[in-house]
Length: 315
Image (cartoon, rainbow, N blue to C red; front, side, top):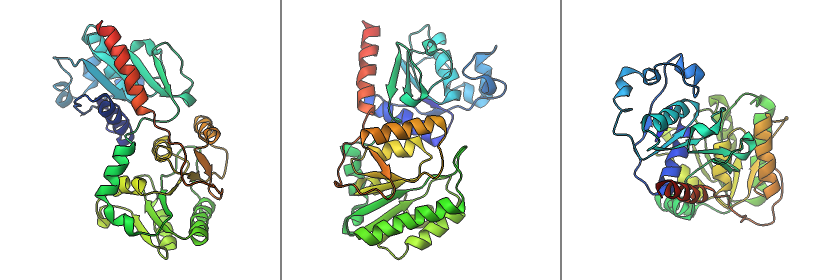
């Protein structure tokens, strides 16, 4: 399993490996320039793309299966297929932005618009969220059971290109969550991400402090309760910026709400539209009659299809 070290990419690759039920060796192998600039297009001296300390991890015996996620990893999974004389089944997660035939399988979200005979399309990103994962989260954070229902889980991302986190966004999101808590009662379980601006996190934490629940903003607040937050959620509010966060939220099987202030970047807008069409995503102030909705869980289906392809290759 190869990534560039980005947490979101590693999480997708690990989720797929777990769904395939194969032992996973995780390799975070960043590329050096100029190979990093061109990846996954090949330049002369392919293995020189890795720093000397990393080359010993990218050497025979080659694995029977390699899973990469992200543009940097795409060069290495492509090379593995060639170096192993195609004995290694190379799987690439996310659109490599070149012909997918350089890999045995490419897994990409539908909103990327990639097509091909070896392309597996998903609606969202791969993730580990299923009934067993949620049950383990509830068990690990059993104290959340004592919080009043409905429990509103709040997942905070951060600014990205095309999405500004200005004062208006911050104030509207904070007010919307508070109004729902006042109207419905219950409690709030909130967490930040690495990208959440500290002033925004502090303001939201202060605004929600009058309601029962907890707000996790780092190790000072104890172990990261993320699995428990999803496991105990009756409703989820998630910022609109992250495909990974949205994908994991809609895998739970409860209403998921978001707030958008301006047109989203094109690919992200298409993803939001697909989730709304499916009945998985709602406006922040939307009233949803039921607290259970059909969960979106695609990782096991992708794994089953890959097993068929690997078996067909072996035959």
